[in-house]
Length: 359
Image 1 (cartoon, rainbow, N blue to C red):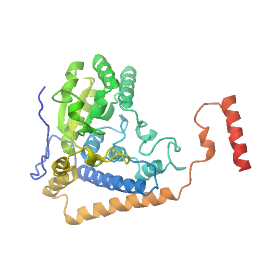
Image 2: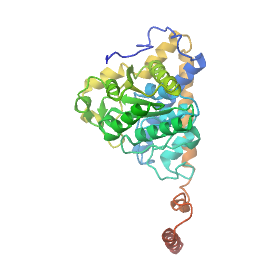
Image 3: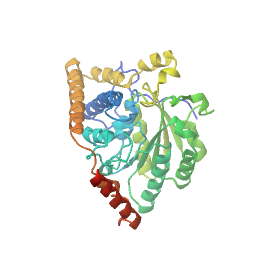
Image 4: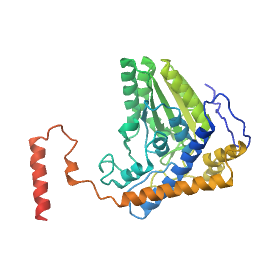
């Protein structure tokens, strides 16, 4: 399989519309605004973690294009099974940024009631499946959901995102094989960001590309410039349409880079050479898309400033709202565990209440 890299906007300097894309000017601007907003969100959440106001954070700086492009290709009723570096995908799906901030604080308005680590979102109304820390679990979940979709005769699609490190896990191969055998309506989006924490690609795979791995499981693999938001959208939309038409899965490899550290507990300057950052900052997905939209006369200095200021203000307002909310009620500890509380859990709950009353 060829290692060709699909591009649409390239470096962004030549603003030529791809007429095969079903995107309006308002769609293009919404994509750009979401990318700008999530970068502001990432920066603020990392600052909060450093200040001790939240406990942990994972940023997706440099990967905004593959998040937005992939999520934008889905219909509202489709299912998304993301990994922990896809906050922009939640925004595209219609999740309010304030709901994401509540989750990072784990407060009383957190949809998962403080039970998950920060950035481990779960939004039922948006079919945005719960994120988990263990690698690749969501890939198996996506395939299981896709099998249920096919069994029921629905026209929905399941899409899952994961990093290059996840391809080294057994669940990746199990899921790919099952999806290929049963020709399931699932799209695998592999975000190849060059490192699995500190492990570089050369220790992840001996294959020339990740996309070519799909051939072993009997379906198509495509390779796309992950910092070109329209190329990601084009590749994923084609894969989604194919899956919806009953023609089986696709593996989309998005070649990108994680400019930020793996998490707030990591320092990527200890394992990434300086030239790595220099190379990939030149390919910044937001800068490239901005140049492209300026060339289409959809952006100018005034509009860019407005979007940046609005994004910052939205994030700041969400943080202020979240910090005004207290922790989840104590009784949420025992809620949503069993339909009817077991005798053992009842005793434990009574013991806890007694201890709290006694101080």
